[in-house]
Image (tube, rainbow, N blue to C red; front, side, top):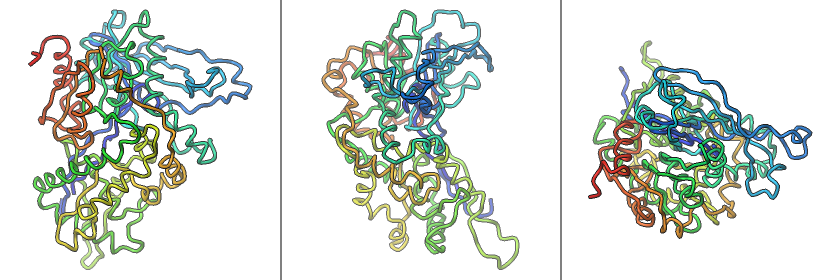
Length: 510
């Protein structure tokens, strides 16, 4: 069985307030994870934010709060092949709207600066990389390759290692209401404020920088264009143009994405026709198991609905890998069962044990002054004839996988999410989300913007992306079906080179 999992979006600075054999094989394309914020510069300096903002450790009324930590601490240079890196730590307020920021709890934002060997002292421009997500860390740069290699020809770059919000750290907050109050500060609006906090302390003369937004990082970049365009020199978007509208756009987004997911399922089974029966067989096994599913090593349960979530990233990326589903029968007459190898793989694919924010905050990224009310769950009900696994088997149809949507039942079946069931429901009903975009500012935009728009993108719908692009003045679009959502990972050097060429005159206007 070839299964793929979803690669969560990147945040670099604050994208999370920075801050994806014998038995039958199911063929599934699977993406790699990339989701935090980063900075980069062309021949320049790159700054990457790898993990979400650090959990606040100082309460306003604590004795330690009387001693303010330094706003910016820089470490020494060190090396990986062909690159030089150094670490930065910034102490930022949890709540920028606080009347007195000094009494707001503090967070640590970690950023890693990256340059080519021998360029440490050169005056290179900065490129801030905003990873997809929300809720996943940016991979640590270990070598010069892909888009990073291209970026380091011209920019300085960095990655972040802020301490993530884990189940253990969030437990310190106590009640579900306090967790919600804390998490409301971890959306794109505050990611941009973190980025600006860092920019004025890092860039010489507090000058503007270039940003590269992948997936949800692109959403953050459009928020940046809306509220802090003076901090931007250029904006590069890859598979990351959000729907810009009042209130909550989740219903519109999930309805459009559901249509795309259906198309991607059809393509998947055309590519791997033998998997039609493989998936049916697994679904039957799970449905007939005691309790309607099989226990997972993590303590959760794998049900037919859970199995379908493997489409999260498997359907939207170009690569794939194989996983054996069934244990081999080595003693005649032994009972058929799903292998521990597959069950462990499933737990790892979800990755909610270390990164619960993706599930908790996913729908909130579409909310402005309105609640999501479990939008994905409601919209899935409109397509029950397509995504009901049991009915699909009964009617002799392929079992369709779902996309990146998060559903309320996941907080019953995924062990790492169970303790956040109340938090998730409160977030789904929360209405007073602040605005994320300013259409009036975008319509008068003066910042050069180039965007790669993937025609077959399963996560960022093409039609909705084009609708927003028509509202951003001066944006240049590269529309292609050569790549899917994972284009920056799969062909990063070519994608980044194409976008930069569109802005520096190397690519024709028409």
